[in-house]
Image (tube, rainbow, N blue to C red; front, side):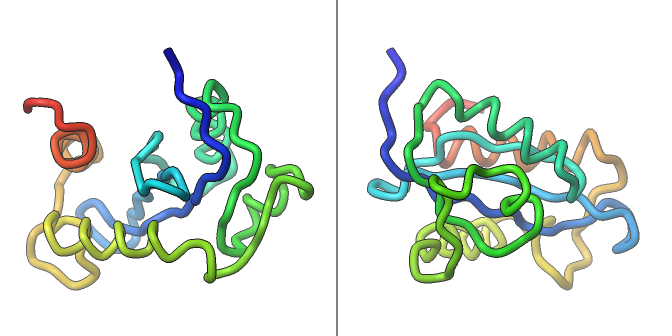
Length: 137
């Protein structure tokens, strides 16, 4: 059974693999009311990543999205279902801080980095699955 979610916050978070030139982004969405992670995607900073996240969120029948003003959100989300601004994205920004603190690969300045995209995605995915979804690793 899929739970209906009225409102969701969506945002993306920057990291890198091997060098800062090879960027990797964590796209995720949370329930605005409870802060529960609904879905996430690890991908480049492109519209295709947001489309993939939207497909994962489709079963939730979300009525309102809260985001920042990045172009993909403006292009791909329906204007009547979309609110831009920092006032409604505080929970997801807090999750970013938690992730950056607990997963060193997401820190902006670090000596702990991934050498492959696969390993980068696995480490972050395992942490999210354990921390957010309570799944054993």
